[in-house]
Length: 167
Length: 167
DNA sequence: TTTAATTTTCAAAGTTTATTGAAAGTTCAG
DNA sequence: CTGAACTTTCAATAAACTTTGAAAATTAAA
Image (tube, rainbow over all chains, first blue to last red; front, side, top):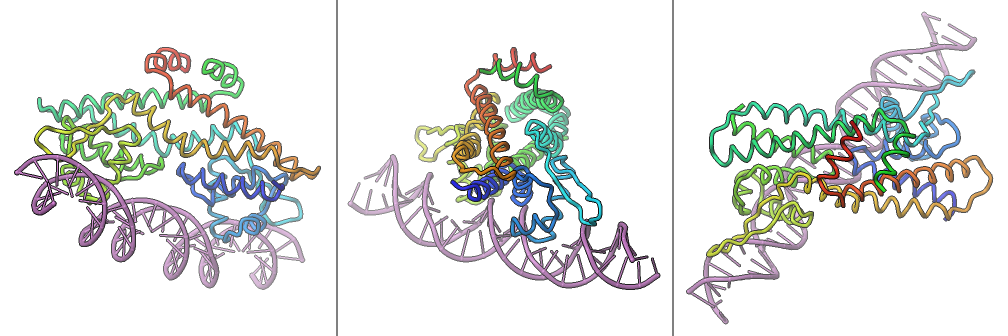
C-alpha cells in the first residue's frame, strides 16, 4: 500500500465509522485528514483535498472546533484561518465521549427519571412498565457515572488501572 | 403522567436514542414496546400498536431476533408466531455491544493493522501518517479488548468491581 | 394433496439528512 | 471609508436511508 492509498483509505474508513456513530461523514473525513496532516490547513486546502464544497467544509470545521477536536491558527501576514487537529488520541476520545453524552445520554436520563411519577394501577402492563423503566434508569445512571469518570480521567489512570484490570 | 403517556414517551425516546446509535427507529421502537410488554406479541399486534407496516415490522423483528434481543414463541393451536423480549437489561447491553463491535469496530481494526505495511519515505506527511495510525491502532485495540471483556463479563463483576473502581 | 393462514421479499415511494454554491456578511489593509 | 479577501448562511438539490404493501414463498391443518 502506498502512502497515498493509505491516506485515502484512512480518511474513507474514518468517515464510514463516524457515520455509523452519529457523526456525519464530512465531519469525520475532515477530522481524519487533519489527524494525519503534518501541517495546519486552510479551508481552501481542505476543500481541495476532500473534493468538498466550501459551505460543507466551513460548517463541519466549525463543529469540529466546537467539539474541541480542531484548533484555529492565524498566520502573520495572511488573512486566512488555518486549522490543526488535537493529536492526543486519548483527549480526542474524551472529547467525543463528552459531546455524545451531552447529546444522547442526558436527554434519555432526564426522561427516564420522570417515569417514577407515572400513575400506576395493579395491571401487569403497569407493573412491567414500572419495573423495566426503573431497571433501565438504574443501569443508565451507572453507565453515565462511568462515562463521566472516563471523561474526567487522565490517560495514565486509564491505562494503568482500568486496562490492567480488564485484561 | 399516565401509563399510556409514559409508554408512548418511552417508545418514542428509545426510537430516537436508537437512531442516533445506528439502530434504526423502527427496530428500536419495536424493542422498546417489547421491553415494557408483559405478554408476548404477534406481528399483527406490533403493527397495530406502532402503526407500522407488515414488511417493516417483520424485517425489524427478524433483526432483533438475530441480535438476541427478542425470542420466538409458538402457542399451541395457533399458527402465528409470538415474540417476547430479553428482559435482563445487562444481557441486552452486552448483546448490543457485541453486534456493534462486529459491525463497526472490527472492520476498522482490520484496516488499521494494514497501515503497518504502508511504504514510507522520510517526508513529514509519511511520518505523521505512520505515527498517528500506529497510535490509533494501539488505542483501538485496547478499546476492543475492553469491550470484549465487557461482553464476556457477568453482571456481578461489572457492578461490584468495575463500577466501584470508577466511583 | 389442496387451501388458507402466515411470513418473507423487494421494488417503488416516501422521508430524512447531507451537500452544494451563490449570495450575504464580515473583516481589515490601504 | 472602500474594496478585496475571506467566512458564513441558507434555499435548492442530491444522496442516503426507511417504509410500504402487494406478490411470492412457506407452512401446516384438513
